[in-house]
Length: 471
Image (cartoon, rainbow, N blue to C red; front, side, top):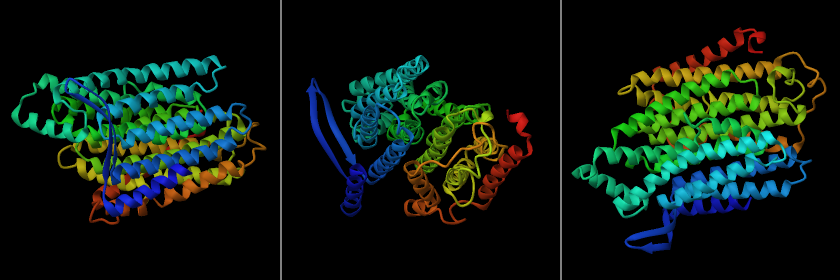
């Protein structure tokens, strides 16, 4: 609560007085100046507010979800560490601090995934998730060290100036620019669960669901924000941009396809996170940073709501296999309504958040990258297919023995879930304050129709297939 309140006060102050950068010297030797710096810009503080609100809702949700957990204090301590690392990522003003807090994020992920450490499967999952993310972290460290030696500073503003200068005079070889760019991409790839480092997010589903809420909404957003901060450095290498585009495309389509094949309800949506972050990578690769930020925001809110509704189902049924669930719609109206709102917010349903994001992305891709437009539309259609598939089996199918007497969740879980559902419905109004997306003058009619049609194709396809095919 204090984090949300303080973030709101600072955000209001920055809106009136402008952004500031706060720095403290940490280590200086032989021309290397390492500083602890925080950039209190409007964008960073808005991201901080997003992180703190998601954390607050997740913590309230956890009070109901983990009400019988004997080590609740340890969970909240780890969640606080988790939130602090994410706050550091979004506020950092230099690459050194960004790398440091990303390491904190990796450690906190390991500790939260392994929260139930008495179970051997959980321990294995935590270890695998940690080692997978370490691959990206090590490659990112190589680029950080190289930039410290070549640019002489790790401050983002200094790095931008250095990149513009060396690009103009050609003093950096294409090979060096490519290696630096690939290293800078590798770190966010691991944090955003992008191919081929996507399997850690699947393993992370062994952890408590309240942590999964943050992991699939805020953590991946923080990883993508680091990529946005280093975007000017990626212009040193066309190869790095091409790799970013390829990785994003494969992750978007592959993640959506793998999600359809899942019977574990949490994993069915964790792969969807990989898919949507793939579209964010595509937006960054084609120089559409505003679209990337809007998509991160819309996806994060809707995906958090999805995992709250999924967590409610798991808490009341003690089951994650969708083939053993059914008939929950009439028994859990708040959960069912939240799931429907989240699903509409994730897909191209007019006028909710991702509809505008997809429309803007399609418009941005069409002039120079028309071959990527089908990727966006297919991802949207596959996501809609997966959402309807799970909805039919869990909420509409005939009741199973585990769901015949299932009650609605308690108020500690229902309150944050319903509150977030209201926020998801208000996302278009929030977007309008950030970016004028209120009408056809911004998103063309052709793009709007294409996005809506792709959503309808996904919904109709999932509705037409027999439930026996899904099982």
